[in-house]
Each structure stands twice: as C-alpha cells, then as structure tokens.
Image 1 (cartoon, rainbow, N blue to C red):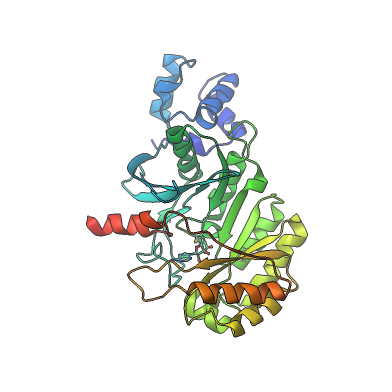
Image 2 (cartoon, helix red, strand yellow):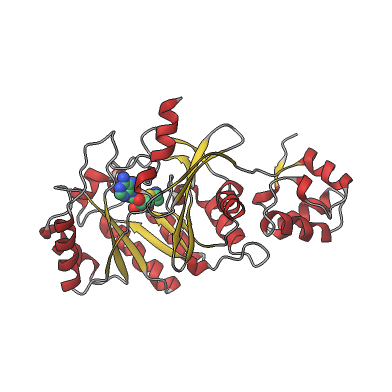
Length: 345
Ligand code: SAH
C-alpha cells in the first residue's frame, strides 16, 4: 500500500484522512501543529499523541523530511547554503540569507529543471522530477529548526520552474501561509518564473498577495530567445501582458529580474529599449550581475556597465535595484552546489 504524504495535506484533508482511519478529528489539529508549527521531523517527537496512533501513522502515512547532506556558511556575509537529501536519494539546494529585515530562504521547486536557460546551472542535466508541497516546505522547516531563528521571507527562486509544478506550488503556498502553520505572510513570499504565460494567468486568479518575479533578461524576443528557450514558446508581448493582468487582478507590483551578461544584454541601447518596454508596467527592475558558471562562457558585466545601465533606466523613471551578491564564496548561484556535488560522484 502506498503511504499518504501527510505533510502535503492541509488541515481539512488531514482531518478527513484521520477520520477515515477511525481517529477522532481533534487528532488532526494536534498532528498538524506538530508538523507545521513545531516542525517535527518524525512521529517519535510527537509526545502528546498515543503510541498506537503513532504506530498506525508510521504504517499508513509518510512524513517526508529532508536530511542535511552538506551545509556551507559564507565567511563574507553569513549566507548559508544547504544541500538536502530527499527520500529517493535525490539532492536539492536551499539558501538562507540574513538581512536586516529578517531571514530569507530561497527554495528549490523541482529537482533539476527543463527550461534550459543558457546561463543557469540548475538546468544543465534537465528535469529529474517535481518536488512535493512537503519537500518545498521542509526546506524552510529544516533551516528554521537548524538555526533556531524564525524565517520571515521565502523566495521560490532556487532550482526549478515553479509554474512547471503548478498544483504543488499552490498547495505549498497555502500551507506556508496558513495561520495554523508557520503563518508566513503572503506579502513576504516571492515566486519567480521564466515566463510561462498560462501559469501566470492562472496564478493571478488565485488572488494571493504574493509577489511575482519575472525573469526578463532581455528587452526583445531576439536576445531573450538566445538566453531562454522558453521565449520561443511565449513571446515577450504575451509575457508582459500576463504580468499586467497579474497586477490588475492582485494589486501586487511585479519584480522584473534582469541578469546582466557582458556583451549580450548590457549595452545602453538595450537599457533604453527596456525602459520603454517597462514604462506601462507596474513594477521595478532588479539587476543581477550574471554569476558565471564553468559550463558556459558568459561573463559578468563590469561595475561601470552595470551602473550606466542602472542610471539610464532611472533617468527614464524606472525603479531599479542591483541585487547584492550573497554567498559568492559558497557556490551561491542557482544549482551550482548540487551540480558540483553530482560531478564529484
Ligand atoms: N525558474 C525560475 C526561478 C529560478 S531562477 C525563473 O526562471 O525565474 C531565479 C533567477 O535567477 C532567475 O531570474 C534566473 O534567470 C536567474 N539565474 C539563474 N542562474 C543565474 C546565473 N548564473 N546568474 C544570474 N542569474 C541567474
């Protein structure tokens, strides 16, 4: 018999599960609290549950918990990078970044990725599989447990394309922001996408208060296609229209991410095209100096080019921030730690 993954169930579903197993509904509330508030990784920790129930649960239900394969702590800024093991032997990575406004965790949404963005390490070996809601949550739960510090912000910007794992993503958002769980504010949650138009439009209908980040990386389809294969499927005009709809439906401003690659998308002509493109959008742009990966020969734009690019956007009335590089000394960029781990094996 396949065991039910109870960490992926909401309280209502968990109640139905326990009732069908002949248990009283109040047990669901206790169990849910152990899983999602006290962040228990095993049934043994659940001291106020009867032994018979725990035995029944071990037989019928699975409580997926990640194991720490590797922990790296940056000497520069205290960023921590985790390589977590899943029950099937796969590994994923997550990052904890400490900011003045609180602790932020960047999680993976898939094992690998099939989007093929040219500069990204996560996609080099393609997609292995989707992560379950439990596996997404547990990246945050384990980090909060290990550090003993509250996680206040979550960004779904690690390996994988969240909108390519839509149903699990939505259940994850509901559980993470549930008042009976960690109760993280939806406003403190960001989901980053490479621009899957139907996914963006569907997410807009959920009426969440989360932030949508759109990986733009180019001001026109030609350059975008050279960096992101997904641009062949969804033209920029459609992607931006979907972002506009997301803003209209949710009132949430969009974060446009733009990784600067020397000689590819970082000249002033591109900055100017970008400014006109985003004029009608409600959002701001986050410039990311590309983090070179050894499998590709992309080069980071130099400081001067980045500043000039930023200035031109600002002159055109666009709100711009430059992403601070965190954990540079510990393979900080998307998928690099997992990739170097897999290469060693
Ligand atoms: N699939 C999602 C989320 C994962 S990547 C998406 O595409 O948005 C998070 C962000 O980091 C994306 O904007 C992605 O394009 C960018 N990124 C990935 N690898 C990078 C690298 N080596 N340097 C700079 N940005 C990178």
